[in-house]
Length: 485
Image (cartoon, rainbow, N blue to C red; front, side, top):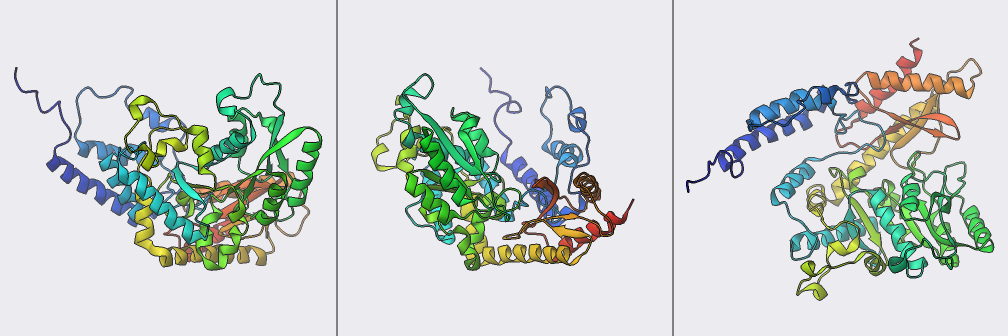
């Protein structure tokens, strides 16, 4: 039997990998050095990218040089550039240099961390790096951490653990067809992220189980109304199961009064989860540590390093006081995954739905080491300074108004030109047109929300490469484009 043709078996040879790897790294380095050469928001139309690609995979392999050229020519035009310094939409994020390199190393190792033995470093580095982050934010060591992909999945696991605590025998018997079970309730504010809605649906509680508590004028949950709602539900035979507070709400980045919410939950024996996906990172700055006041009393919390800690998407850090209860809800070990050291180690597969676990901790560890606590604090402080600067410009201009406080680095504002009375419908049309015009320049990308029915523009500062000149340019565009017919 002849040797197999090496052209159709095996991997890219080391020499080719090294040559093409240098080519790819050169492309990445050039991209990160000059992101402003691209329009922030992709300008392709729906279907353009798909139509530009063949309908079938190639029969014969192609040179990596040609593939990379097509990546640059065909794929990059369909990218909205989150690494652009003019990206001010949603929650501005950065895929930093050390994080990008860590992703490459993680991909090369291709480690799977379902069990401790399938890669001990995956499990143990996750524990260490989450410990570093926990202490940087000033959280107590009672919070054990685990990494998921996004805050939506972290919150789903938090509420699943709350269900495990509240519903008798839910793991074995579920909830349907059990007339002995009462109705259960989950509480959040009217500003809470939509992932809470999806979680209660997925967990079988039903969307009607979610009760949204009104917020105050600063878009913070009314803790007094939360306590009132839980008392009303108990009198009606509905069992309060969990409440979700937020540090850095999705639209305005407002901070719920966690201390008061925690007190209400403790009185009622209700699980408290705190969504700090965006705002939690601010606590690394000593002057902002108060943002997490009361979180130490929660049962669980989540912070996303991929939002404001320069970590390439995705990495969500989930912390829980009752990780034993989470494991009780999800641990399931078939025979082929049993190991001799099981009693002496913790296996990541026991902490959630998924079996496979990527080596996400590597990039968090490298980023924390590369920038250091001092460097991270300085960058976060600068982002908050830039947001306050922009907010000051808005406040001082007679044709604009700010619609929410600026606790961190997001500014909510709108145009409201002087000299006439405006209806809300007219202001929405005006501001939607202004938003589209600003985004069409290719220099900036802003998003919007609605606050008390008012169409609101959002400028979110959070990119490592954003400088004062970029924020100033966004403000210049807002003013000049408002004047155009």
